Amino acid sequence: MDSEIIYVKTASGEEAMLQRTRVMQRNVRMVLILVDGQSTVADLCGKTGNAQLTENALRELEKGGFIEPRVDRQSLWAESKKVAQELGAAALDQISQFASPPAPKDTPPAPPPARVSESPEVDNRVFVHSVFPALPRSNSAISQLSQFSADPMQALRVPAVPLPPVLDASARSQFSTSRSARSDRLEPSFVERAKGLIWRPRRKTEDKISIKPIRRGHHAAKRWPIAIFCLFAGSVLAYLALNFFPYDFYRPDVEAAFAQATGRTVKIGTMRVVGYPKPGLLLGDVRLGVGQDEIRIAEVRLQPVFGTLRSGKTAFSEMALSGVTLPLELITGLPGLFAAAAAPASPVSVGHVSFEKTSLSFHGLDISDLDGEAKLAPDGSFDSLLLRSPDRSLSLETKPEGGRLNLALEGFSWRPAASSPFFFDSLNLQASLENGVLTIGNLELRIFGGLVQGSVVLRADKNASMLGALSFERIDATQFGNALGIGRLLSGDTTGKIRFSTTADSWEKIFSAIEGDGEFAIQRGNVRGIDLTEAVRRISRTPVQGGTTIFAKLSGKMRLTPASYQFSGLILNSGLMQSTGNVEVSKNLLISGKMELQIRGTANQTRVPVSISGPLSSPSVQVLGGG
Image (cartoon, rainbow, N blue to C red; front, side, top):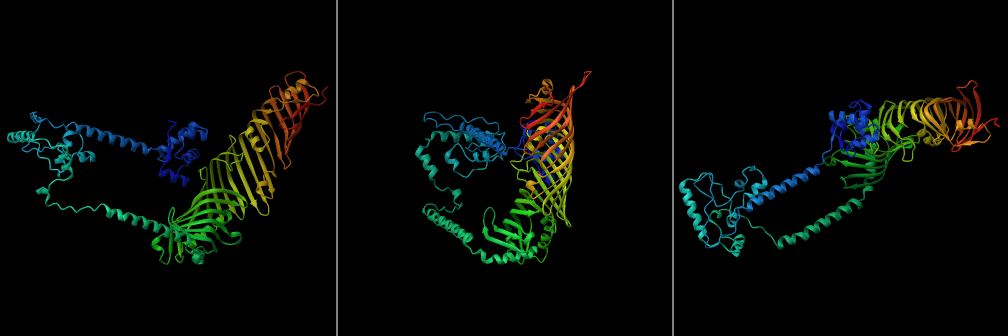
């Protein structure tokens, strides 16, 4: 596959983005979401990290009609324009070959050119169709050139219909006589040619043609200042009407109309009419509901259907909500709002509702800067709310069902915040919100080169709390350590599982108060900054700093507390050496612990106890009881 091809979504592909059932395979759907009309095949392969998977998915999507290569229409237009210019230049070059300078007075007239076909009558004009017999007569450029003749005076006449192309003997002799007579006359001078172009006497055939005179000059010049003044005055009046009209006088009526339509109290801070980008009504600082049920909207743009402004029920084709802070608990009440607006007795109706710069929150846990729309049923009732991040890396669909809210979240190449150390290659979860409890029943994350699966329950009563169980495999220990803030202490592929719970005053402190128990195993890695082999070789009280301990497998149990990370029952296998012990890392990144090293492969196996202490960035290893 060409790595420079740029794909764009087709209409079927855009529809598949909204309907999860259209593209069932997760990898193919991931590539479909990444197609943005700007990234090449090489860029898409770089985003996914798997070139073969990406190219296979692109072929499948293109075969299914979901994407297509982008066509640069500007280059096609430029190429067509170039061809048209070349065609016009060739036509003018052929025409110029028939225009010869006037013959001298003493030069005998040239014999008429030989013709393949003969006709009883001859016209002294040269038609372009005879010069370019291969070109179609419907070509606009050729048809315009065909109206000009070799004789400039004849070109000003109404074009005559070409005569039949067959000449008999009498017509040939008549043509020769008339051509000789014309050649004996003097050719007109340049002044006479110019005068003929500017003025010529009326012919009999033109007496019946009535052409109205075209008024020019000072009459048109007088109308320009008037038109400019009217345009300027209209612009000034429109500006004054849009900006200084007393809209606040009508604000209570608008609030009452929307309160009746939604069934909730509506307060509007500002109101005015705008003309750009589309004419409509702009409402600022809108508050829907009161108390804990209040929804705050920074700006509402309403585009009315002008034919309904004087009717009893005003229809709005578009309602755009910008700067919305929407708690998840209040989404369950949206069906009631839209049902009230769709009722026959409602004074207003809305055809489409869009969202811009929207934030979804769960008691302080926010996902911000989302755009999307409310999906409505044919009868105008609410079906679901679909929101996406501006770069389409995250999509969230919420659908109320009775008193429960179902959520489906998908993300690809998504980072929760610009400064967040967690970067998700893919994110997929199914959740439900009921009675203030958010339950994530199916969680699947691809992060740090591995896979994390499990379930999590979030509560927000007086305090924020979280509990759950996770299993992980092939997690890069170095990337995970950097994200946790413990540095590049370990490397290798990590597999394990953990159960955890935590309670804090706010979601910002939730991870610092986490408690959990689990087990882990790291394959084919090393411990940086700790050299156990060198400590055994010295067998002295002199501390050993720096170095690396390479191992085939490191396993053990872990316990997470608000104060430290505890690792017990550690077993490190490194060739002929095996180490066992316990290590603890505090939250201020100080390490302490003891390990017992055993050298295998000899008749007398040697056991050497060592201690590990100091800052995590430069720990010290010292043999216990050494001389």
